Image 1 (cartoon, rainbow, N blue to C red):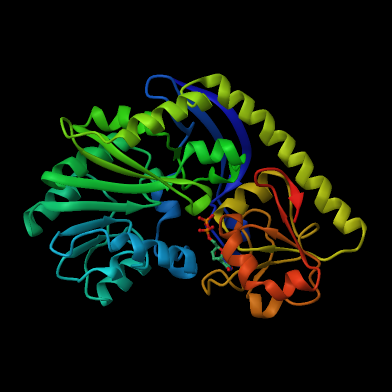
Image 2 (cartoon, rainbow, N blue to C red):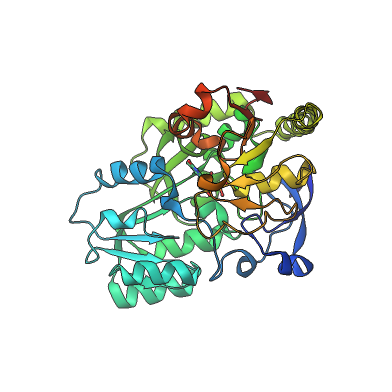
Length: 387
Ligand code: TYD
């Protein structure tokens, strides 16, 4: 049974960057988060239809951050080259390109990216991940040693179907490895912007293990990662496999944080409300003092922030982003213009709100000149502050 704990109001498609002419047809939904008592899963009350988010115009490109390119390259080295691998949600091939096309298969529902990995030589299934697709893949390619997914499984509402399909495609000793932002990270950072249409769930190890187990799999190892503000890399195998200490340790830590209790999320919801007040106060003050405030990184996360906190072009002049697909468009819902950093990140900027706070180290290193001349960043993570 789902119990609602947070209402983030009316929200648009988080990655739905749009042109002015498209505003009249913009889609909105009510974004509410709940706790499922049976599995301890933190999940949305109503899910948004996948086709509205993952289609041929999908704008998120994994290789836009050096941090992520390096992250996947480093991890790929831990996988033996004689294993065959299937990636669910392969995006622009940021992970897969570290493997030979002879050994790797891509699954991607967004047509623009499915074409890219196909052109790179990878057998690519342009489709959502489900049991019929898993059966088709096994028929055409045999069972797989490794199924990998990064920032993708938490995008799929029906987890039972996802895990059943994985269980079908894996060979007897196969491993399912997937990474997503962690619930512990979200609670510790007060990063409620991890919640948006594409993230119907924010995972704890406790909840994942509960749901994997009813589908023939179990968590056998957990790695805590720094990326995306704190993620977990989950290794799952068939029930009965050896379980690493990290699983017990992570579950114990999550219990200490109260991630298995509803009241923890009620407390979190209060902190979210306060964060909204604090962020609006800082931005309004900057405006009053005639300072120029922009936003750095047109992220899905900032779609949640701007719409929930009612922050539009009145408070943020524009957003800079390196992704060509986002430039020249408006941000979803609040319609703040997006331009390239070359055009917009210059010495007229006084404050930059960190939409991409999860890449703060990479950004501060890159923007040394801005920092040296006294430019400031604003963040809401873990508390609203100017840095
Ligand atoms: P990310 O935080 O992964 O976004 P999401 O919330 O959608 O998952 O994406 C970071 C965005 O910020 C992406 O659009 C690229 C952009 N970006 C910059 O513009 N400059 C930078 O230096 C970095 C690291 C990212």
